Image (cartoon, rainbow, N blue to C red):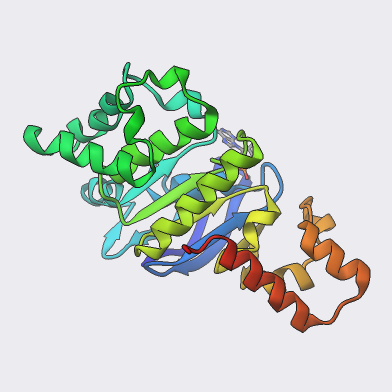
Length: 266
Ligand SMILES: Nc1ncnc2c1ncn2[C@@H]1O[C@H](COP(=O)(O)OP(=O)(O)O)[C@@H](O)[C@H]1O
Ligand SMILES: [Mg+2]
């Protein structure tokens, strides 16, 4: 369980960025976080793993509190991050070393590192690229390696902070497929995104607006009830079509099923 309990945060005093925010994300949930540029999504992500600390209130993962210095390391072991720009995440010269590098920081025995790294690359279907140079990969492949580097550390939660936003449609599709696969295996997925098409397939949407939680719930009522234009969001094509044609709600449920099944294993 990841909990925000009446969290307040600002970078500059008097200019609140997160304003009394409370919510709980349960183990194994697949949550999308959406909202206009600058509404505080990345700030929320950083508060989740103690990169930033609340000015008031508490952020907790299980029994650990980010405000307790002794707990922060425990929290970071369990929460992995994939960022927007795949090029900023690489330090070493081969894909395999890149995945092993993260393990050196968490005291995994040497003889176990390689096998763990290979398993992680296998999970994102990048094992064939183990000896490739990271800079030669496509954007989508780089993001998959970034995921492998995190998987090797065996976290419970992965936060994707607009990790699909610089990818082409094919790269985005593969990333979303991997997210759904990890979710099926029991991982908690927090997907911060601007792509509303991707939101249709998740379990729960958090809409952030002016530092507050404006909507928290299922994607269906979200797209039906929330005036996207007011929050600078695009409606997914399926939703626009549905609204234009004035279709009844049950058809929307069919759309949702269609989007969900698109990401499920055949
Ligand atoms: N390091 C920082 N110092 C000062 N202000 C910041 C910093 N990072 C973000 N902000 C401001 O905080 C607000 C929320 O930013 P952010 O969480 O990055 O939004 P989002 O990820 O939703 O685009 C924005 O107004 C942004 O300009
Ligand atoms: Mg951001």
